[in-house]
Length: 368
View 1 (cartoon, rainbow, N blue to C red):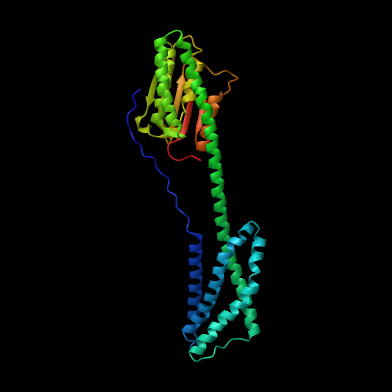
View 2: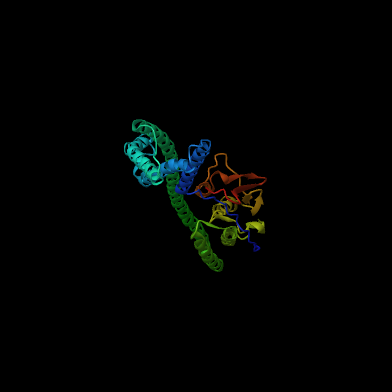
């Protein structure tokens, strides 16, 4: 089998990173107060009795005091993260701070305003303190509800992403463990069949058995190298398959012929290692071993739309009415499901006078 060298670069998916939550929150906070100050200045310009700097002082002092409290809330939010799944409890704990926020906010804001007015030789006039307390309390409750809702949304989203990331890591670890188990089942099964082939010839044709031992050594080296990772190139996968086919052809020298139909443009496509081995084993076990006439095996690899189509077909056998998949095909199907999800498929059925095992996997992406 001649496999032409051809490199096909895989398209890497582009992923956009989310905007950092604290940075986005601070930008939103700053924009909010810019709009508040701008609106206050525009309203003051319509009143000639109010200087331009006064609304800046009023809203700026409120912004300064509120910023101090929002920074404290940001630093303390980890303490209440455990209650994010119970919003009423989370808001209840946060609302308790209003008992401290309201008086300190009023003292700080009105202290700054009185101080600045004294510095410029003026007196800051405002409604009676009872009215100020009621007004500022209602105003703070409204603003606190708004910003606590925003902070809750940001922290809930962050926690959701963290939990999702951990879940994906756990799922990945479980999938890798399952793949390792499946691959561990596959290798002993495959080498047991190869050794049986050599054993059958050992006392009949020593020279052929010797060639098979050498071929098995090459196959063992190739498969162990491929087994170091779950995925390998189609070129390497076909190389392992060819070594196995050569061993089996030595055993059934005059009873089997093979043809390889390969698209050289897809040979660098990544595929699960030892994916095609069970298909080739079934072709020999159910086709060649049980047939009294010569059997022909075809191996086809080609691109079909956005999928890679891999087909191993053989003459000399048919599907029984009560056909059930063996361990090898179930193993293969399970590995495809773990790696590609529903984007991959394995189908075994009649194809003219042959039985064909067809695997379809996505050329780019599609893995779960």
